[in-house]
Amino acid sequence: MKLLFPYSNVRKYQKDFIKSLYLNLNNNYNTIVHAPTGLGKTVSALSPILTKFLDTDKKILFLTPKLTQHDIVLKTIKSIESKFNMKIPTADLVGKSSFCPYVLVNDKKTSDVYNLCSNLRKNKKCNFYNNTKENYKFTDTASNALDEILKNNISSDKLLSYSCTNNFCAYELSLEIAKKAKVIIADYYYIFNPSIRQQFLEKMELELSDIILVVDEAHNLPERIRNILSSTMSNSKLDLISKELLELHYSGLASQVNQLKDMFDPFEMLLLKEKKKQKDEYLNEIIFDRNSLINEIERILRGFSIDGIDDFLFDLKEKEEEILIKNESSQLTSLISFLDLLKNLYGIEENKFVFFFSENISKSNIRYDFNISSLDPSIITSNIFDKIYNSTLMSATLAPLEMYRDILGLKKCKLLKYESPFEEKNRLDLIVPITSTQYTRRNDNEFIQTGKILSEICDEIKGNVAVFFPSYELLESISQYIDSYKKQLKENKEMNKDDKQNMINLFIENKNKGAILLAVANGNFSEGIDLPGDHLNGVIVVGLPLQRPNLEIKKLIDYYDEKFKKGWDYAYINPAFSKIIQSAGRCIRSQRDKGVIVYLDERYMTTKYRLKLSRKNIKISKNYTKDIREFYESHNNI
Image (spheres, rainbow, N blue to C red):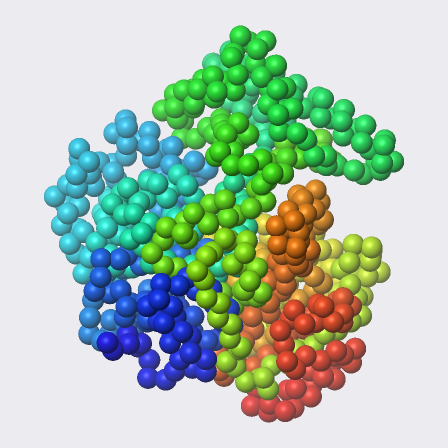
């Protein structure tokens, strides 16, 4: 069988990747691949998978964590179609929150598009849906539109634009396209969120055993799964819920929800007692016993003659449905989710979760939170990977491979690891061991010195530079001391898709004079974007993006220590270096790219940290301006 590979040249290591994956597919092994930027992961995975399964009844699901990565898959499939003069039906799926013409056209902002959609359809108030389906069947006009759309593999953006213009429901059209497709590009949630997966498989008329799964940027998967199985409820959220209920004249339920705030009182007392015991006035978290919270909630509910959380949940869900008929979203949804998880935990052992109570003090108020956090993503993933026909997980930062195999619970699995295909001479890797973002070193003098070093390095690197910080707080604290002739563009937490793209466009527009992108590791710009050639000539990683060792992280360390004897690495060190390597990887995106990558923190000097950077030719230097100049002198064509 001829390999469906669309390009005339095969990159270094690419041939082995393709051959090894094809062999694993034949032997029905799952595959985890660490493949650095530039190796060509997407085509290296799709070529053997399509070659093997194109003429079978298996469906290929290509999952990515970000919409920006969908276009890469679509372009790769179009290249294969062009080279081999064939048609590979492909669907580009996104969630309703990004794919609802009603929301877009009517300029609606809702956090609960699914409930909005359900109620609009039920009450026949959505013209987009009404024009697309009648009595659960496609209308004649929608069927004719589908015939035209199916002639081309179009992106979700184009389908949404077409649907807005022609009054169709983009989501319903996309699901029908997906039914007829061989390849479906979608978000992780379509398979790994239990409720979404069930609905999706039913609509597609699929079983997990019908699916060949590709998970791109798979280093994100463990945290995404843990978030699905986690929930938080605060006293301030209960205030919002109670206020919403009163405004809608549900005074009885509002009173019950307001009374629930009493459940915080005994835990506040426990926290205060622990502060005194440890003589630590800044202590803001304590572990709580799940049953103690359930008992406290049920004690409060009995005051309203309500028999337990299950009956209360029934009342909440009933009122939620009524509210959603009147409004487009409801604050009640968050309380329902929290109580559902607290009461049921999906039938999972309690030791796979951590329950902690936290105090958050701001200038305006004190907020208290009950937090339920999952410790084990394999709760969901292990069962899925057991049932999926075959799976391939890949990323440029899947080292150590054994960690992802272990924590995701994959069995019958082969591990593949490749080096970067790019010439080492094209990049300068520098450790600058002068300052540190270590917590004990955080003060104005350290921030001023770090800003001065960043200014000098940014001015020395020709063209555009991206600087990645461990957090938004450190970005703000240090960036005020950067003094450069280059234009500074700063990421913020509230950026949407358009804001992000506008900033990238502005960054590229300033490439001749040079611009500085100030961003956060694991934020909007540290992965999923391509800035090849002279769009980005240097990356500086400031500090180490280690998570604050709060109760959740400590429990995660303990859990992985008990399960794998590698708690510190699996829960704390390796996730930080995944972010570091992802950030550094923005710089060199092709064989012709040349650039400077700087790791600015004393801690990179330690052997255990330096080895995790996986760089052969990395230099420790305090004379960084001289080293950068010499690098450019050795590449006069830059």
